[in-house]
Length: 129
Image (cartoon, rainbow, N blue to C red; front, top):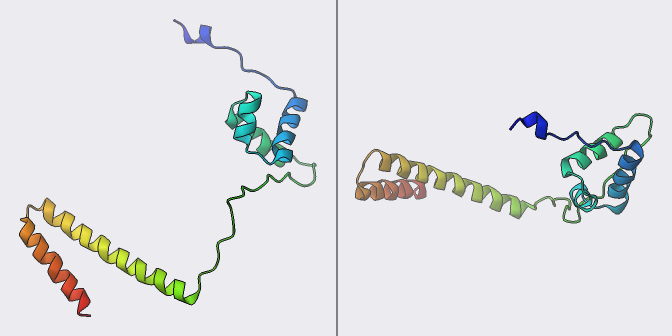
């Protein structure tokens, strides 16, 4: 069956309708996705309308969408927390290195006993520092 014969003409919406739906998103503070499902539009289309409405020249200030309630400023870590983060990052780096060593040795066909011996030697070498 011919694809062009089954295609339908895209819908066209008036500027007034677009403005009303965008105002609904802005005034209600809801996401464009939830409003789009309510009014029967594709979420991508409504998001595009919201962006175009916000970037409209000569409209003064762009509309601000309400921020999600879960978004909060990230607190600055204290000195103790920063030290703990640094320690955990060093430990993570060491564990990644051990994992890579084990992965490379197992690919090379080294027996498991030799791999365990290499890891024990590595750990004792690092703890001796």
